[in-house]
Length: 194
Image (tube, rainbow, N blue to C red; front, top):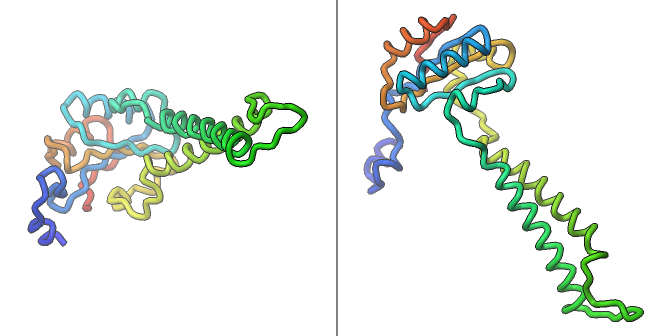
């Protein structure tokens, strides 16, 4: 597979990075505070490609990692607006253009009786946008990830706080990262294979 990718005339940014078969270095921390301190220190040291794995959300972790706001809110707003405009268009087309029936002198289309359908279709499409947007942004379902090779991975969903500095980071040096993680209080630091 790698030979085939090398032969294709792709720009360098589309080819997979050569990481030497490694995913990165993962450190295991005891507390959320220790993890946040490790993230801030790693970011200050110049590392940019890292990920944190925790059993529950930690307040301030996105700011510590330098993550931008999630685009999920914008996805939901766009889906809601599509639902609202689709409902108005559907009711106008069916009542005033496709099958106009004059009943007791009422207008062919009025916004007042259309409000429940407009609301319901807006809520329906925003719910679909939320679920499918979240799945797409989180790259779910993911059946395998190289971080699963970490020997203490089971604790990531229970009581451990993991920090992974990935091999695609420009400053990646496994020995330096191990020393850094150990100095920050990592109980177990490993170079993880991809």
